[in-house]
Image (cartoon, rainbow, N blue to C red; front, side, top):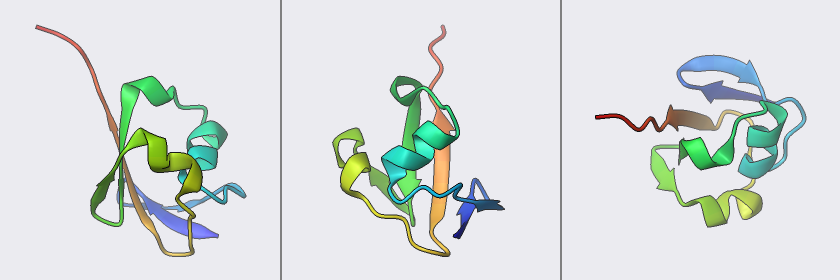
Length: 66
């Protein structure tokens, strides 16, 4: 399945849900925010949110600083 990941075409690496996608890309979930097809997705919904061909996923890294 192909998706748009941060504006670039990407292979979902067999992931069926947003949570699986995050694991496949080995991203630390506590440091990112996810936008799925233009809608901010709460972390608690990641395991139930299915991916479909052509989905647009934006991953935003959260950084603390001052």
